[in-house]
Amino acid sequence: MSTTNMSEKHQQRLSKQFPQHRFIYAANPEEGRSALTEADVLVAFGNGIGEETLDEAPRLKWIHVMSAGLETLPFPKLQDRGILLTNVRGIHAIPMAEYTFAAMLHISRRMGELAQAQREKRWAKRLRVTELWDKSLGIVGVGAIGREIARRARVFGMYTLGVNTDGRSVEGVDETWATHDLKKVLARSDFVVVAVPLIPSTRRLIDREAIASMKETAYLINVARGPVVDEAALVEALEQKRIAGAVLDVFDEEPLPEDHPFWTMDNVMVTPHISGLSPMYMTRGVDLFIENLSYYTRGEIEKMQNVIDVTRQY
Image (cartoon, rainbow, N blue to C red; front, side, top):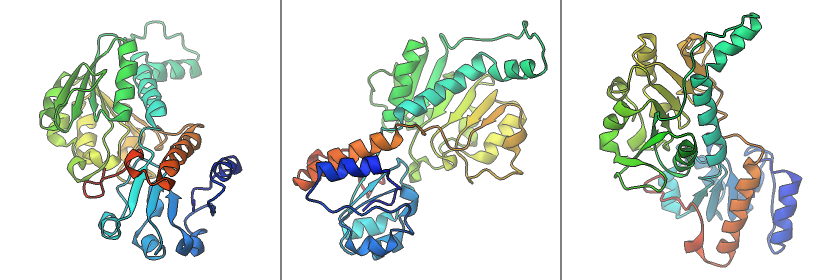
């Protein structure tokens, strides 16, 4: 059963490849509620799955989440029921890497000021721009998204400093540091991009002390989840110009409240949680589901991609 408003094109792909299975499609979780009792496999977005979903689906054995974020899922109940969980981690890598470089190029080439000068019919020839070449890029979280960002950074001549749990080396990243050395990485980075999943150990990972360790000329780019960053501490640092600026795609509360200071700060760019969006999103997500369903129906669970450890939540 799918509650993702899957297009007819993707429905036909599934029916053609798996004629032995019966597929039920709904536009959203509420619409599909009555059919949950029949579902052995559920394809859904993570924010549509709660404890009541599991209560209404006694036959459920596997959930495939069509998003990377899993923080709202009822993990204790998933563990109790022994339900297999997979997600689409990795399909966001290309659009989120492109978003990151769009942000950094926008900053370094002063595109916002140039657009304003155009509106004012002002020839801003003396506007000073910089380059990404030879800049240091701190990547907090070098999973699929972080690695794709690092791969593009090499093309731009940037030096990459990755952060993961234990400091193990990552192909394509110039240096990798453990999470407990995060401040050392932030102190050396001209740009910092946050790309970790939201789990208990990453909540407020970028806290007041971490922000204080950044260069005054550095920019923070958050494409992870809002609660990974201490929002109040970031507001304070931006107001006092203790860092140069921020590009924020995710927030503690979404949509961002109209009275939030981020909206009007001249050193902040706000985008509405769209860094992972792409016209290829569902195609890549369904591709991954088809691959996993092929393994699942053959009983080859060990070959399935993106199987989540529900005890660790990632």
